[in-house]
Length: 170
Picture 1: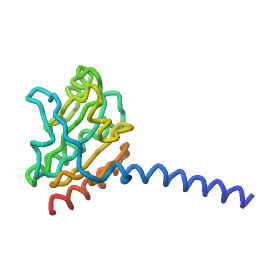
Picture 2: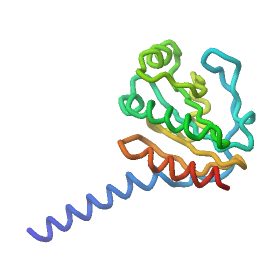
Picture 3: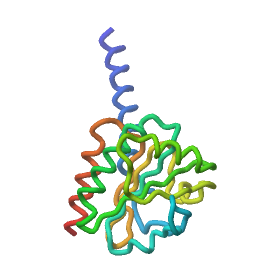
Picture 4: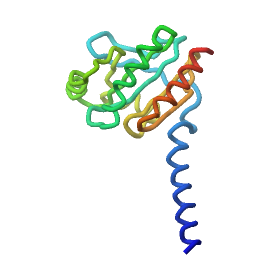
């Protein structure tokens, strides 16, 4: 019986490690950030190049994603607090039809003020190795990916904040 419990625990720990390691690190979370230019919500096209010299958070999301709904107001708070310190947040909607995204954004209790762009054909999502919703990428002032975080659960925003605070001081 003890051996069986130990085997189950070992498997659970290994599974947890497999889940958490890719969430915050991995081969896709290093090196130069892929450049892009995409249509934006109610404005001109947005390119990563226009934010050169800033810390940039890309948050990939979809209107059908429950954790995205939960995370969105927290992202707005982060953006509002740090935008004057050389930080920007760009919401990257991954749906083929931006009408669903627009409906989602209009229904939010707290409207977002950060730029929202539309990756309708998933070109940017693929370039950043996005495999689930939401996914968050943080890019340093030199244009290098410093964090790739997959998924969202309450408290994950603290990991974002730790990275942002460190990078705006660099």
